[in-house]
Image (cartoon, rainbow, N blue to C red; front, side, top):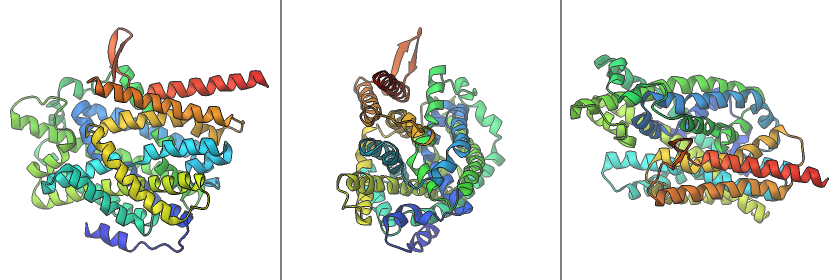
Length: 460
């Protein structure tokens, strides 16, 4: 933890400009790019553990493979265009291509996606496990610390924290895995899971698998991903950095999923029976550290978890703060674009993260599958059009095609939760399955944008 504090304290901006605050002057080298992208994009580490408690080995298919595929597509088809553009944020790109109204709509969606609710929840859960304080108090304390860390140096501080977090996450999980593997083989640990959780699909139905695969498109529209690619020293570094990052994510997926499986196996042995797939959730890793790891390795493991989540929380809080200060306030009131509005936007985004985390039912998977799915489905098509299409689009219809699908998807999520159906299950095609929010928002967005396109052509 001292290394993280030293990395933060040593981060000093060369200038006081918003550009320097948000992009570090577009100066990220390949090692810095890879380290910060890997640690930030893997910040949902407790959510991986929660997913393993539901899907077992299928977590790799549902929450690993889709992201590798979309990250590779991003590297080959998007990264050089994004780094080669003058714009450093998604709303800025939308204003350049489509106008002010779509830019504001995009800024609102980016804010919903970037608010670090999942990361504040995970950090709060870890601190609660270590301190015994209430979850709310832990989340407030964490939000204050992250605000302080970013307030001075922005992306530069986040990158330095990411470099240290990258080292700690691999070290902590590697020593934990090899310690556990010496005691029990991974094959034996997998055999203690329920039969469905031992399968490649984790017992998920085909609609669920499709939804999770489309959720991998989060990579395409993720504002933190976009920010780092925009901040690379060159288009080549951005492309190569993503490809190297995919290998790092695959390696860390193996370590983290394996450790979660060991945690489930140990719990099954403790209760003397096969473990049910829904138990443990986000407390798997804290429980594993407390009950199965010797003191020194336990410390490395816990610091690895905290560093990873902290790096991601800083990254998304920075994007959310920039969205509030530069993309929303700055567009509504153009004279207010100073760094201070972004700095206070960071504080506001972290304050907003706390109630969102509590409303979600304190589940990272719910935040990914429900909240994020509604935004991704609404933003995906317009974002791709902003870089891959030279055609003109009607600003009004484009804005409607982003905002309306998101609102309706969030409404569907709220209705499902209030109806006692948090997984958003529906009955169709002769079976019951989880519909989620991504497929409905994406389908409606495609329908609105496709229909408006046909209508505009008929009127020409």
